[in-house]
Length: 209
Ligand SMILES: O=P(O)(O)OP(=O)(O)OP(=O)(O)OC[C@H]1O[C@@H](n2cnc3c(O)ncnc32)[C@H](O)[C@@H]1O
Ligand SMILES: [Mg+2]
Image 1 (tube, rainbow, N blue to C red):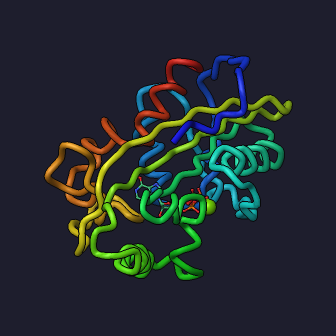
Image 2: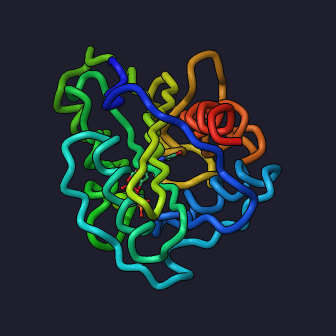
């Protein structure tokens, strides 16, 4: 799948200081804090600032990341970093994709979301390939309206039943290419070196620090 970045970027440097992590997902916030650890920013999450969770009306990962970052920057007056990510299953035409969080329902029940993915794959037939990838789109928005985008992807296969209780979301059913363990079974430090989020952060870090 081609990356859906909106175009060339005019990049500026992020100064040490405060940065809003525009996410209400504690698993994601934990990973983003770890990835930003070495760079002297003082991240505060949207939940800590009591910012509302915007409706994700975009049709791409990048559009949704931008919408979340923009809202947090506007409301806080600080630079804001948002992450829109998801699991794309090839045999399901890319689903759940940008609807990955919504497949877990109002209760954010990812055991249920993983069952739904598995059931959809079963319905696609016994020979349906188990190939899938994770996408992570990052948007960094400044209070003055300027926005930058970065994206990362990791390819793998889906396993059933899910394995491991590390990570979050769909991690227990995703096994990265060339690995014998799921993202639910590997240590967070290990995931931070190889994941879709790690790859998007590699781009961000190169550009803004
Ligand atoms: O929008 P925010 O507030 O950041 O939190 P969210 O959970 O709604 O996040 P998304 O809209 O980006 O939805 C993406 C979903 O895809 C799943 N996902 C994203 N990255 C993942 C990862 O590294 N491992 C497992 N699942 C992931 C996760 O369950 C998310 O809820
Ligand atoms: Mg969301």
